[in-house]
Image 1 (cartoon, one colour):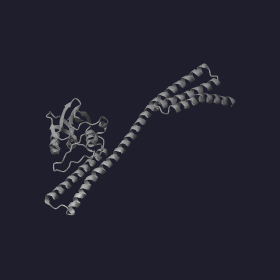
Image 2: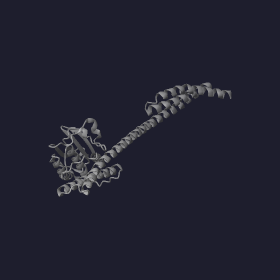
Image 3: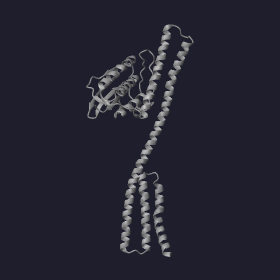
Image 4: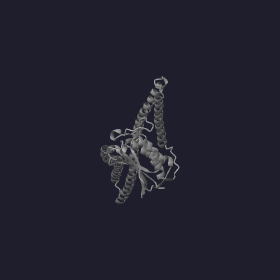
Length: 344
């Protein structure tokens, strides 16, 4: 019994001789990577077992052959353990990084959601106040002559259109974010989509005194859905016209290369500060302070409404749903929004 206790004491002392400094080392490694921490942890464990086993073997007076066999077994087991630890620690590090990115993304989404609610509340409050004031004026008989009454009716229609557009944008964005957007993909002539969008945006550009130009080119065919692609081009054109001052030009061009088809809308907004470029497609980002907004009107004479900060976010969602990419960069006097889509 005394020999057993002595063997136990020697093994314990040898293990503690490695384990205690190992614990102190691990405490200093708390701020390092998961891979380093796990590998050091397992190395300390293996060394503690090895030293404890060697101490016990020394006390038991093992033969040279038996000691060599013990060292081989412990060495192989330690090497395998360290290999497993290295693999597992890399997986843990990757999972930890993914979890951190997911938490950061969730925080960004939550902040964007709060910002969106604030913007939408503001954008709905403005037309609602206008509608209420106009309706009360008509109801109380403040205005009676037909011309003024007709003007008030036009204002009511204009404010209603603003709210309708905002609700449509919210609905489209909710479909994108919820993953409920289902596209029916087919070969689409990109030139036809651009032609229709330019024709639809022409009255807005005319009211803003902005020249709208579609470059004559061999427009490629793309694989996509016509309604969603039309929404993409229309949003880009409205955004470009809104931020281009009177007398400026908005141009649309396109083509194809080895990476697929591309479409570009170039405006005369004056440029966007470089730090804001990555945020341009975020929900509720407007950046009016960074750009030169146009003072535009609608074709019926009512003031043009600023967007709800959703148009470019919808563009990104719809383009990504087509497995494409959208980007923006500053060019001389303005910005160039470029959409890349799979060729048809």
